[in-house]
Length: 237
Image (cartoon, rainbow, N blue to C red):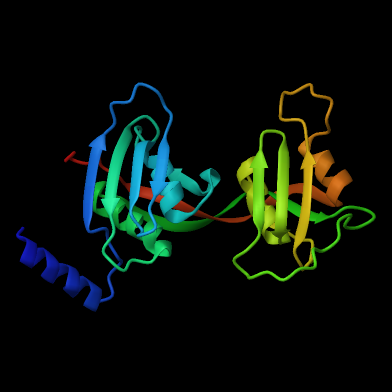
């Protein structure tokens, strides 16, 4: 395809409201001997991904947790790829992952559908005695604040209960549903004993209850899942 025709097709796609796409893409099977991955995103919306498998690509592209991905080929985890993708000028940074979805559809022939399945969940409620932390009273924008985790600990800055539930979902491998009814933003930090550790610290469940006044109860509930219908190994370039 010549450059002029390529630009014309891009313009036509934009006119018909098709998903945004990267301007230049390179996809190669990784030759790395280890499983360490590297993910970089530039301010212009482009990405450089090294030694990543399709499972990781999909978690990033669709902003989902591992328990929200179902199906897929036998090489979903085992085959790894190096990907470099340049975004068109003027691309917003928040379009990166939508463009990654387009890349997966074009280069991996990926097709998916969404389902809602009844899966194990945690319901996050207030423990007896109520919340043990106080709201953080300072000016902030809606985009500010969040929760960071490290081995054996969690730290929050201007975090909402919904963001705490989201982070816990990734940590615990099941969706955590915020049933606290609590508004506002909070600062806190606590440590806990990682699974299998004999550090003497409380479990994450006990730490949440003792330090924050939050309780996790097991149950089942509707979880949105992305199901892989088709995926093919890409032709390298």
